[in-house]
Image (tube, rainbow, N blue to C red; front, side):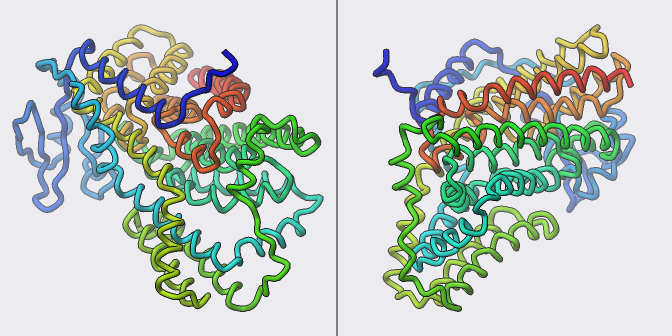
Length: 497
């Protein structure tokens, strides 16, 4: 038994894909009608069993379909994806996925996730070019000196700043860029790589779980529920502060134990492998001149520009990836690297993150199987039936659990919002609670399971540092249980207020 190893991230995802393939043979196929808005024609399009019906884009049309959403939410672009129409679920002919569908799902997933995959690869190339100069190693060495005796500040600042990004504009996939950059900083501070992964990943997870003004979850979910996004805002701010405080305290407790005794690290057996992966070069001979400082400035500015672009300029993956590609080229000119060396270094850097990119694509393949097998809406339909006749406190808790389960199959926060909220939000009316309770259960359910969800970003995040999923589960489980208890208590109490 001691020789048994926990499977790799890729193997875990293939096992999950196999199980989902089997599900399509047993779960009935079905689908809701969907409604989408066409800005160019100012018309609604209702898609019903492969039939398209054009409707006038008016509030009356929405009322007739029992969709309690203001028409302005569609016309101003707040809701830009097709939404499910309540009461339109239809059983369909089964569409079980074959072995061929199973083996091709990773390829389909990689194609669908091409935007984020290219972002990851370009960032890898950018980091490779910067590392070539030695500027990055020199900067980290200096930072380690500055942080000496104040290392806990690193955990507090990184986790808090990433959480702010998560709660305001959904800082999630973009965090992949920060793992290879910040993990060496945590190692230089005498922590292990798990502390670095936890600070970045959990900061993002808690921020998005307790989203306050995040347009990709809070605002789009509130719009789809037919309420103003500010409804329930103070409660979410309270949850953000509470959960973030608990999380930082948990990370710092583990970090202190590792710093005092490195053998207490959960990844102590990987210390040599991780040290080689993130080894800082000898920088005593490096002349930290204006060229290297300018290269670091361009590198840092690219991330600041990315954050500004996503949060203010409506950028997405194409624009973000372009920024990092241009930054790599500019840095190449600054450090005066030859064209041949630049290409070789860039490709090698991209190759270092190829495994991470493939994990993202394979995880997306699981969603492809669900969609092609027509079982996603069936799970939603039966889940919406469970809450009938419940009291307020139990309703909030069960809805959180339901959303956690659904997030395994629909890990996208915006996708989950537009697909489920028109169906789930009216359930709040039947038990006498505000619809903001359903919005909160959606956020908290997704956020809690996100901590361990293999179809989310955790496997890709761990792959950067070559940390096994089993080590993460051992690390996160106590915090996971505490956050579940805290969340369910807060939801139960708030549902009666």
